[in-house]
Image (cartoon, rainbow, N blue to C red):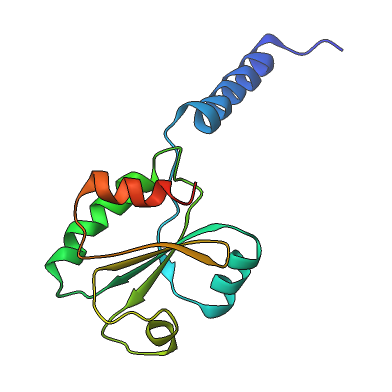
Length: 135
């Protein structure tokens, strides 16, 4: 089969772009999704690393945590962490089930086991160390 050079060249360019996108670009962290009990339980049953972020829009510590968590989520060591966000101002079963009493709380799970918890932590190294506990 004799493929014209321009078609072959287009294919090679497209293939090179695909390889670059998949392997060379930094990992894109999945953003924190609103807490959903069914999705949370499923992730637990699958043995996933799960971070529950309890935030409030008015909370300055929460505002400081957000870019830290987004940045850490792009690191290869943590890009598979499933992140759930719970709005502290919308009390519900999630806060009670997780025994959370204040905003800016991070609760880390490995499967069904809670492995770490922090409140008002805005230090990148400290949060990175916390996430490493479940890796």
